[in-house]
Image (cartoon, rainbow, N blue to C red):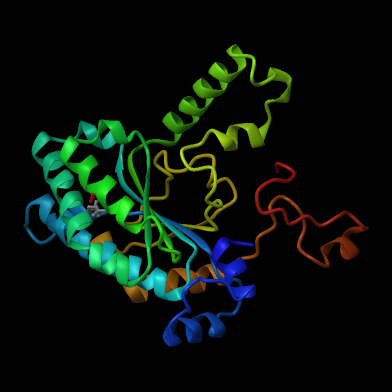
Length: 284
Ligand code: FPP
């Protein structure tokens, strides 16, 4: 059970879901994705289709970040992870990289009120030391300001790469082994999990990708192993509240098996055990 759902069922301090959010959740025909991750793609294409500079797509994309963040918080999502800047994105022209970093700073400063009003806690995953000092400062200030918020967790993936995250975890485990604090024979999936950038946050239930490409692009390679994948042709600057609700409705209609069988299937297939682990289980 997610932190949000646990807090809700225990009458905990998680902020109440707004009336609209509650009605939407209750009308769903299946489970709700507590943890959502999004590959925000298509900013450049959206702008170029209008004959505009690519960076104007990123600027408009920032408006979608605000709309999706507040909608997700209103719905009672536990965590929202946004792929804001990949390690590969450093290969883009300096002008575009600088503009993206400035937009990040602008967002982090301008939306502090929004984050506080919605009780959103901000954190970041990735090689954060790669970011320019001004972006690191804005990030640290906003994370500190929102640190005690008990609502949704907004995670920005910045200078993030799934392979880098796994390599970083492997290096840390190697150091622990060399120091005698971990026995190599004890290394298993839970060990690796502990050395990820953010070991606490549950794996995403749903990974959304905008702008039509059918690939993971080095995003949350470990964590997304059993996530449901939803791809829309809509470019990120046009992905707003209604589009998020569509993605959640699609998720509610999925049947998740985690390599096991659906309930009831064992009887039909001669008694095999049905498994529904959230984090671990048979690999299939
Ligand atoms: C992909 O579009 C998007 C990015 C590389 C950056 C995403 C950044 C933002 C939405 C704005 C800043 C972020 C925050 C969190 C405030 P693309 O340029 O690759 O699009 P294309 O595939 O059409 O070229």
